Image (cartoon, rainbow, N blue to C red):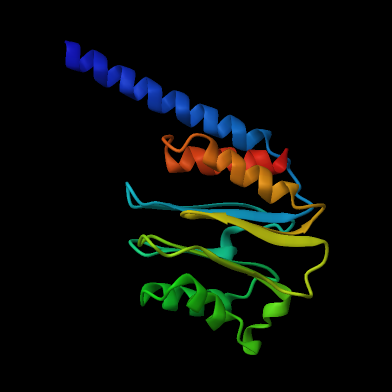
Length: 187
């Protein structure tokens, strides 16, 4: 009976968390006038995640997660070929700065794009690049295992707030921290 009670409490806690996350997502602005994303890894659990907001109808095409390796985002004027190339480099175990160098090849039109890479193995810092032809404020803030990048923003406050929110409670699950960061950037 005690184990059934613990199991029910566990289900209730998961359900409550899911409802809270859904409420946060519902509370986010319907139409973004900017693009920003947060990519992160949790080295203790091996989890990898991405959360993004975009001024386009579809943020699905900006990121790639490679299980056991890391995550890459190609945004602004997202480029499927650049993302595919970055994903192949990520699969091969390349370092983040090498991946960013690889997609800065002129054939990918890097000056109209923004890149972010975070890998799961320890000792490798995130890498980012914001092209010179992106309008509005663009840039990134990184920390151990996380990168927040944004473009056509009013100011750097969006990425700064998102990173601070992500780092606020490091013991929380990665998914909750990503949603919290996205909400902070929206605010």
